[in-house]
Length: 608
Image (cartoon, rainbow, N blue to C red; front, side, top):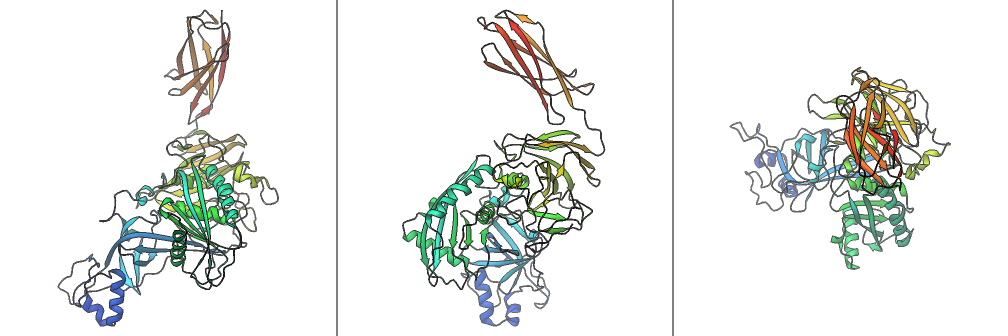
């Protein structure tokens, strides 16, 4: 199935890779022969403007990766190795995205970077790196992202890149109140104020804050301060983001704002056609920086750009045509994920999907709701994705790269028309397939730019998006290469149940449970012997955790825990107090297993 519609975006998920130019920066005598002295000095000054330069010596700041041999100067060459802070800037246009890389040196110089292939997607803005490449037209040309290494002499040893190098996260600065300074600026030749400070404050304090609280299950919030309007000495006919940021900060400081009190900066300005984009942001950074361009407050644009500021890449989709869900030569659509705010632009702002939330630490980390990693065949349950009770997703290995060892995973989640996903109840645009089945994404460890929504109904025609991507109850999907089969047993407002068979093995049968007491009636002060018996089909289920809740005649609850042995039984003891109230006591035994679900049993006894 092919996508069409209003967003004809570029078709790969590699951020604007450039073809490397085969130019080596040789020692200064060789370079001087090909360039004028002025151009040479300019190129060197870009990299190391404080260096003491002499023709015939390698400039300070240019590190050799290959020692000079006894070859003639004409045949010798030297790569440049630079060290500084990585900068990754994303610009979101209506019809495309642009990603640029640069290196900020210790002296404040910014060196543009271009990659022939595979730009680094495991790092964030602000990470201290060493980069090795060729200088061409004042740009550092690198063969691939592997030529950028974390660390170096200026590294603290705990960069955000190291913490963000795996999907397991979490990325830095993603929990707690996010102190956000929003600076409203206009231009010396266009001082229009299309909305008020109050409008922006209401937007950030209300919908934006609510969005991040819901996505993080109450663990993260936006604490905004909106200032301005400031008229900065910039023209609306130009678009220099660095200068806009500098001038906005100067104006804020002049108005008494303490910049150091904030960890996130947002610059919002009236429509600037020279910029063209709706929003732009560095990926990560401390403080993070985002630019909002337009005369209207677009909720989706703000959530999208703040997602970049938190360290998220775009949410893609995989198009394998009308007959396949998974393929090796499909089209990756940059903004293709309809069900993630980092994907398809739309009025609604859907929750970030499970791969994204795992990177942020909002799933599967600390006190966050869990993701169940499936390693054996079984029947697995997940709760509605928008709720925080967990497990909120399933994670199943798809493949392992034979060269790098990086693992690619299936992520399964059950969406409902709840909270910011309430738009899914709109039957004009959505088939409700999204709420009667489960969504499939794939994502790769160490590659934040690898998420892809899979279309589980590829034969269905569409006009502007994948409106029915879920695998609904009663349907199955098999990845024969990975050796895994998925069957959705049920999907509703209470969650979803999925049978997963790995490598053709037989899935365990559902649990059955019974609970008994060693007597039917007791006196105060006696011990009540409770036996919970758990079976999978006709076989005892060993190693299953059992939680028993005993409610006495007055309504007070006592919780007992145990684990079944080889016979499938867990023996528990409930000690009656000497003054235990008379009446009927209720027992609810709840044995749980991540592989075969949950089965609850009940019993009762009396106290004389």
